[in-house]
Length: 327
Length: 117
Image (cartoon, rainbow over all chains, first blue to last red; front, side, top):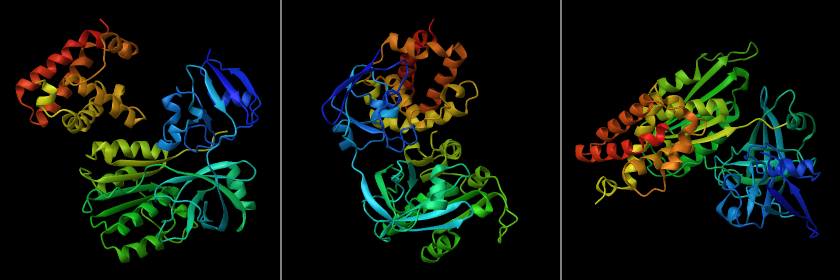
C-alpha cells in the first residue's frame, strides 16, 4: 500500500496510507485536509502541491511548466504514488491577485469578464480563477497581451453552475479574484507565415480563437485564416461585429458560422448546419495547415480526429478542451 | 549500417508516423485498437513502434511485447493488417524494397510475442 508523508507548514509530519487506486488529493480530503481543488482532471491546477521526493509520478506533472516540475510541484488529483511520497503543505503555486474591471452579458448564456492585467500570457492560453469563497474555475483568455490592457475571459453560464451563480448575481467591478497560470499550449507558432490556419470553436471556444487570430496577424501572418464559429443556439453566438472589424483590417480572414438551432428570439437567422460537415466543406484538405480546435471535449476530440484524417499533421493540431467542473 | 540509419533515422520515423496512424485509424479490422481519446499518447506509442520496426534504438523485450498486448486478444488478421499498413506507409515514402523487406523481417520477429502464442 503506498504511503504519503504529509509535512505541515509548522513541520509536523503525519502518515496516511492510500487505498487501491486512490489519488493523493482524495486521500488528503478524506483525512480532513482543506486542499483546494477544481476540475479533478489535471486541468485547472488548483490542487497543485509540492513534494520533496525524487520519484514523483510523471503522470501527475503533465501540463506543468518545466520550472514547476523541477521544483517538485505535482497535480494531486492525478497522482497515484507507487512509493512513499513526501508532501510539504504550505508550498502552493504562486497566485496572482487581481480585480474585476468589468462584467457584462454578451449573449444569452455568455458573460464577458475583464480583469485588471496582472500576468504575462500568450493568446490561446488559459487561467484558473479563484474566488474568495474558494471556488475555482478555468477559462481561456480572449484578450491580447499587447493590444489590450486587461485580461478577458468569456464565461458560459449554466442553470446549476456555482460559478455561474456568482457571475449572474454577485460579482461586480472592483471585486478581487486570484489568478493561477497561465497554462496551455494552444498558441500560434510562426513557422511559416504563408501557411493556412484553420480555427474552429464551439460556444465560448471562440474566446481563445479571438486571441489567437489577433496574435497571428500581429506577428505578420499572411496566409489564409479560416475561422469556423459554431453554437448550439443562435442566441449564444457573439462577437460577430468584432470578427467583421477584423475582416475589414485583414482580407485574408474568412469567417463561417454554423448553428444547430435558430432561437425564436434571435434577430438574425443563420443557416442551420452540421458543424463537422461544414468544417469538411470549407477546408476539405488540411495538409500543411495549422489547426486550432476549442470547445467541449466531444467537439474537440471528434474534429481533431477528422482534421488529422483530412491531412493535418498531429503536431500541427492544437486544442483547448473545455471540461465541466467536478462535483 | 542499420536499416534505421539507411532510411534516415528519427526523421524517417517522424515522416512515417502520421501516414501510418491515418492508415490504422481507417482500417476497420484494427481501428478499435488505435481510436483512443488521447491521440498524443497514441502518437507517441506509434513512434516507439516504428522506431523498433525500423531497427532503431529501443528498449523493448519479448516480455514487454507480450504483456502490452496480452489483454487485446489479437488474431493473425490483426497482425496482417498492421503489417500491411506498415508496408504501404513505406511504399508511400518511396523506401527501397530491400529496406522494406528488412523492416518486415523485424516486425515478423516479434509476431509471436504480440499475438501471445
